[in-house]
Length: 158
Image (cartoon, rainbow, N blue to C red; front, side, top):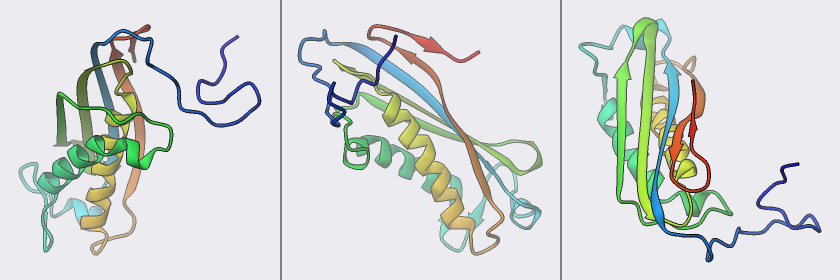
């Protein structure tokens, strides 16, 4: 039976000791979805959205990268990781749907799933923040891991 990795036998929170693991190339991709209401959707032109705060997608990309780099400061038991790369993509889809993908990679003893998830989530929050003056009916959802490679087990969502 599987057990929680960040809890001791006595039920205390603990950071996983990765010192004995091999350094391998680790990659993770995560996504988030933001759904814009009609009031905001009408401002979406040619796949880009601008508000008084500036270009929304560009700000979201930068925020996602910054968040991925600082994941260990936000999620208590995450290891601080040197990232080899982080790519955040923001794309306007149909019916006001904004699709965000964050891809992160490193060479380390532990994976970068949390960094990819954090990057996607913060990019989505940034879109909300920049557009909330237009409507509070913006919905963030669908934050999930798409793929992870490296380490003991690979994962790919079908």
